[in-house]
Length: 260
Image (cartoon, rainbow, N blue to C red; front, top):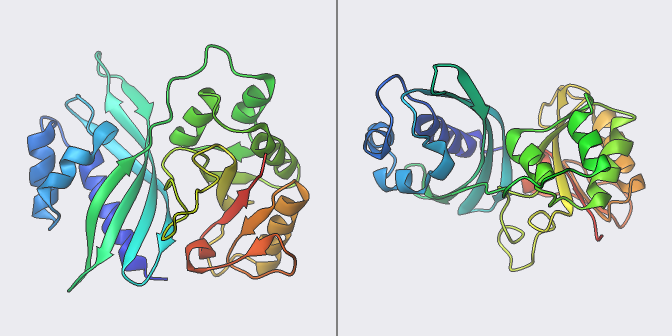
């Protein structure tokens, strides 16, 4: 659904977060994205995408909708990155960027960037946080893992992830940071920024958005999310029950929200 909107976001983030030797710095970033038709001023909002290092590479793990309406959109670009350390060794990192777009002619225009800010890691993770971080059946991108290390994810989410991982392999896209503060297009607060939600983009190695992924797998995962305590389960299919919903935003991932 509207893949060109996601492509606009991914192309920009990739251009900002990767550069060949000697092309670091804000001026070079402005030039890179201007050559691709984006406003060079967007480089000033890139934050952690622009490390002070002579070389960087970036991998986009997933691009999912934070919201998609007729004339505006939020695309959450989930990234891993590597920079050259002081002695030339690669240093791994990553960020999730909430890319905002508006519909214009002839194409969608990026209007703002909101990189994730997970916060500092706690001195010692809880036993449950440590288990989730170490679970080989739960894959966390860098920003989500940093949310866990910062101690900002509610125990209800962690408990659900452990229960789901007992049945499936689970690839998380978003926990807390990098998600819009409000449910997109509304003034209703999202459960994500307060650490009470998780988005999953792949289950048992099958992307939610892939038409070849069996509908039965996605539906059973959504129902397992409700059984694990979610009051607000969004996905690509409308299921019976008060906890479930679907819309254009959630055709590419499963959202699980928790009250506490």
